Length: 375
Image (tube, rainbow, N blue to C red; front, side, top):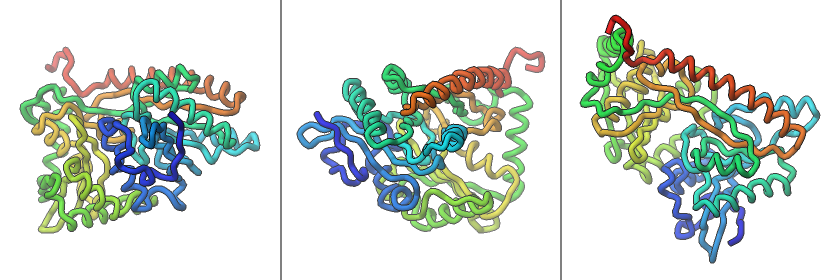
């Protein structure tokens, strides 16, 4: 087998794609090519696709969705301190190599292929960095098994925290609420009541039910929210239309309307037994509407469809009061410069202790019932 570097996932013929589609929709060929073909990556975006494939007889036995990065935006693993340290030393941190699903902080396979093939991919990524004078390589949100292999190969592991919801066999939303402490139940009911009293109604669209008008509405909402935060959106209408066509079976949209007007929408992706909250936006401000569209509608959907879990996106301690629980995430990092590798290793050890303490604190504030007297 030999390693082959491509200038994009779209350059890899479909029949040659590795048997890694089961690794998840976010590292599937359709999702990654949609990003390329609609200009969300490539060009002047600072995300240059450079997938690394391990091939035998013209077929990819394994693949790493790698990108040459000129910045750290859209990664959700923040390394500003590292880039600033390089700058103070008069060194260039960018470009760097990143193995990830762009703009998608979702844990899943990042090294498509078996264990032996993964070992060769890991060595190939390191060689790619060393041969081209790059500062580093970063594998974001890999599986625990992949992280272990990367650590065995000398990569540094970094811990992070997200908030996920687990379905414990709830019969309905009220059944879920019954497992929460009294004040958390009350808060959620109050928030949902505020949305209803504002005259907001929500409809759920799945798969082919999502029409072009719905995608155009969603794109308007998505862009408006970025504008209000004085930021630029990573994705565009062409991308949303593309996944709506090619990955319709994975798409779920919640649309809010009031007074006969559609005013907000959120988009989720179903993959296997998990619902992933991905994007949202609003054209009008309504109290608690974000919680309704981004959390409560998703929870109801997951319960109704008997999905195992719901991941509401990166960060957000406010999710804790709404039944989400802390989950540890991991990333892996190869730092080419030995001096910086040692310094960052020490930095990561200290950070890991802080993450552990933070997780302990979060668990002590669980929304779920305890043996408190009130219950």
